[in-house]
Length: 236
Image 1 (tube, rainbow, N blue to C red):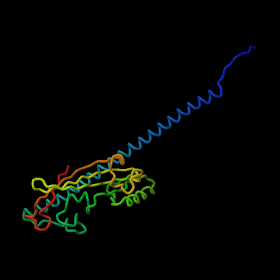
Image 2 (image 1 turned 135 degrees about the vertical axis):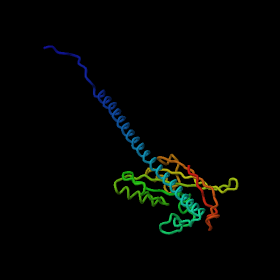
Image 3 (image 1 turned 45 degrees about the horizontal axis):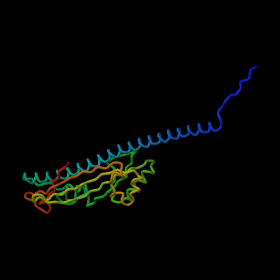
Image 4 (image 1 turned 90 degrees about the vertical axis):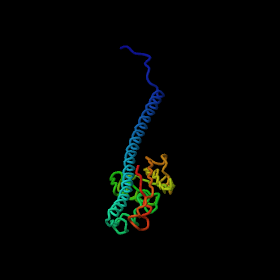
């Protein structure tokens, strides 16, 4: 029987180095998978946030149009010699606004409130049930209810800025509305300024719309306070 001499094998140090290199590879692969899943989650949240902003802005613009059309319909009826129906602005339970004529731009800033927020249930999103609040603490309370149901909420934020100007003797009112959607960590990070902070670095998505309106005189046919300065909106 012949004997094979001088056989070489792996040393313990070589095995440890190989295991270390393989571990680094596995860790890098795991990190890449985690980042990929995180990016996928952010992309999904961004899509939801974009859809939420689109709904809120479309709903606001539709309400601005509706309020002005109610004013215009009353004016057309008065011009035609018919008694205008002012039930939509008489302050009753079924009226759209409390004072005639309705201010279309108040649909964006109801009761003069320029900063609001709402908690969004991503897993059970119903646009008609968005409850806009005037305080961060109220929104977080709504978010806690959503979290208790097993869903992670997002937060919609709406901020409006109003400016006035006179062009060619006509009073013009402009409302710039910024819509944004935040993750819970972004909303918590901005603390009590969670509503006013709408920069892109603090949100998933942000978008700004401008709505302007000039005053028109309807008092020739509809007497009473306010009808001499009806806001006629220009919807983008």
